[in-house]
Length: 111
Image (tube, rainbow, N blue to C red; front, side):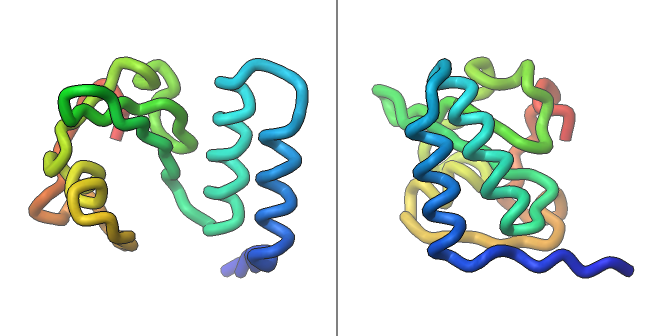
């Protein structure tokens, strides 16, 4: 078993700042940001959702889900794990998200 150590929080913040300050399209920078966070957390999936009008959360970037689901997957505030996190403004760290009672299956994500 290989153990991957994450970098320190200050180093991660410097890395994230550099990604966001880099030249290129905003979507590319968001994709790189998401991948850097997933790598640091040693996470299989890391996604960024943007809150839209009408209490809607739109998938804006992902590492580990089908990239074609970006900008097409939406959840309501309070719906699924992401919606619950948004509703309560608290983190959630699960070893098996699919088995959680709040998990909301979206076939386009390839989960």
